[in-house]
Length: 125
Image 1 (tube, rainbow, N blue to C red):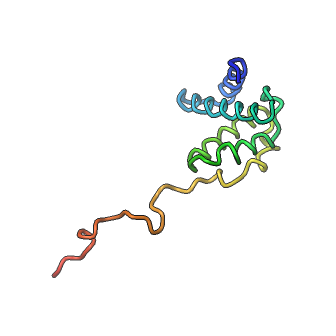
Image 2: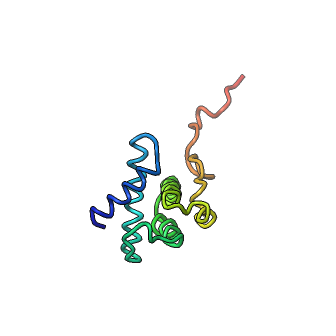
Image 3: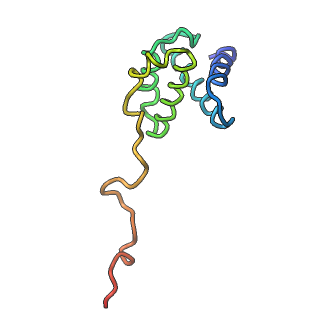
């Protein structure tokens, strides 16, 4: 992806996503990664030529190896991109998936952790 194309994503997301600069910068980075992946896979350089299948593919395959919280962040960025492109009402049902609700952090069933045994025992009366 060339600098000109990353600038287009940056302009698109800056205009569409108000908020703190750190959050906007994170959306821009993820948007550039999504755009780069779409360009490498399909050769589509212009975000205005994207279809919902391109963002679906990016979420299903491009973010598949990431943590659930990161998948959720990529889904949020895809939602902002869809809204910025003017397709959000039509694309929203197609962008749903397991990445929309990350599981809360916490111990897995059967995972080690918790209180140490000596503190968990009751004291003799």
